[in-house]
Structure formats: C-alpha cells, structure tokens
Image 1 (cartoon, rainbow, N blue to C red):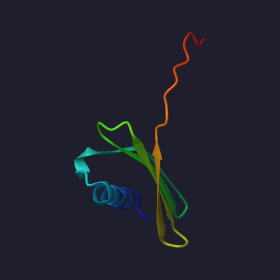
Image 2 (image 1 turned 120 degrees about the horizontal axis):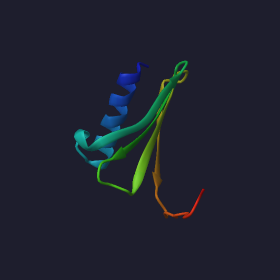
Image 3 (image 1 turned 180 degrees about the vertical axis):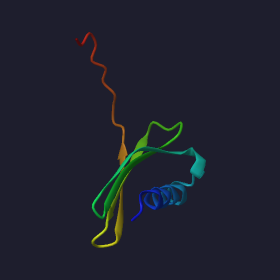
Image 4 (image 1 turned 180 degrees about the horizontal axis):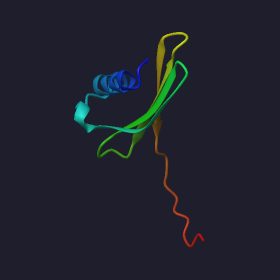
Length: 79
C-alpha cells in the first residue's frame, strides 16, 4: 500500500474509533518495508495513548494496537 494512503487510512480509523477531528491526529513515525507498513500516531493535546498501526500486505489486513502511558520517570544528572 502506498505510504500516504496508509497514513490516511490510519487517521480515518482513529478519527472514527475515538471520535476526534482528523486535524488533531499526529503522525509520530511511519515506515514501509516491502509490502508492509507501520506507523505510530497520537492525538494532539492527549498524553493518554498512542496508536500503533501495522498493515500486512500479504493478507491485506490492518491492525491497530492502543497503548496507554502508565507512568513517567525522570532520571536526573545523567552524563
């Protein structure tokens, strides 16, 4: 699948699934290897979840995993 078509599909799925405007969805990272695509997306202003999409080009299937931030740890004075 074309990279931009894949990202548009991911944005559409988050928009419908979460009920947010497409303009508020951010693409953090994406890549394409052979016939497969993978991307990480988030929602602007939200620190609660990120969305990982994988497109399996062999099976023509799209998978969405949702991850939540459990906690944040700061490590200080690292050199």
